[in-house]
Amino acid sequence: MRWLGKWFNESDWTRDPELDIFRDSVWELTLDGQVRGWLTTSVSIMRSFPFLWEKQECLWWQTHWADGQHDLVEEDYGPGWYTVNELRDGYVLVDDPKTQAEARFEANPMTGAERDRLWKKLDHGSNG
Image 1 (cartoon, rainbow, N blue to C red):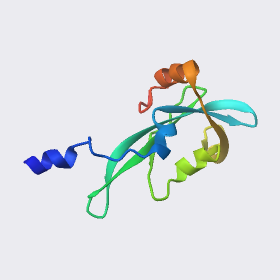
Image 2: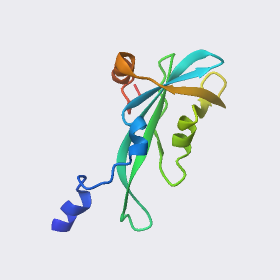
Image 3: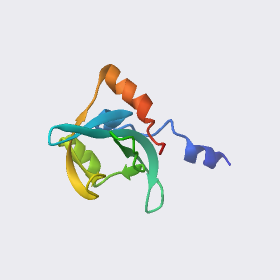
């Protein structure tokens, strides 16, 4: 069973510094200049196909709306990195709960005490 311990050993996974901005982060979402919600992101490890030998990191993201609704957690990973690339470009495409249609929200990373307060309040990963 020694191989099982090696298989799940998380200490030797490569940490991609390009993903550091997404580690336990909060992004403010605005539309037409008004804050409509926030996006929380975290980075975790995964094994990828075809044989699950490849070790890589993936992004988990969740949208939290100003009215208190929380969308389900979604994932993003390479090589496409669709959500990561959108956020790097300052926006994210998500369904607007007001119109039920996809919309392009401006996304800006938050820092400092306000980021810390929102990270705790929004409870990344929960649906409550």
